[in-house]
Length: 294
Image 1 (cartoon, rainbow, N blue to C red):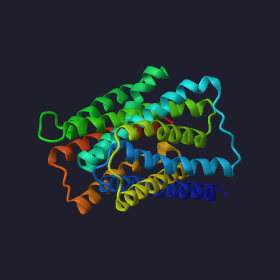
Image 2: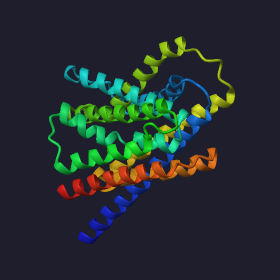
Image 3: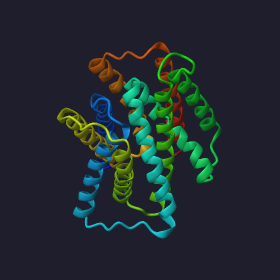
């Protein structure tokens, strides 16, 4: 019986790994489709991505007959979550459109380290020494990717960094909301709906020429790829805890680099590769240290 239970645990872990790698591939595809949509404002790209997510989340809520309940004490955390998440997506989409998708993807992967900072400030969690070390290591890696003072698009790099920080703050609020009993589907719906509604005035003010059918198709593909990534990663953590499989999320960098080369002929320079290695090393240290603490 013990062997059967052990086999089940291993089987579930393998399912979790497969799903989180699948999620990484979908999110890499999302970045490619966003870039393929061409010279459109980031708000229009983000609107389509969040519209599809809002529709899917609404279908889940209706199917499960789940009311949208937040609770008074969660109003502020929810507001911070949806605002930071919206800023994070806008930053990431702007970066994807103006710098190499691999660089944009890696800058977005700084979010776990930003979460450490915000958890310390907002949740009063005292970081461990290795977390502080890894945070400094990740920031060093980010400098290699951003290459301050080198030729490139500094605004695009800054947007990518802001996107990662915004995502980190959003994830911190998701942890707070989850610990307060707010359901995941409710969080996703509130975030997606808020993002869509908040972008409507920006779209009107920064009206772009009508999108071509090709651009609409690319944005729809980006939205469905994002949804596929979200469902896959949700399923992954259902089969196995984050401490067992989260490290495999960095496979997105491999997919993004490969797809960026195949579709756009983008080849990151040596400094970017060094930055990737440093950031992934920092993430790996946190992964194994956290795993050993459980």
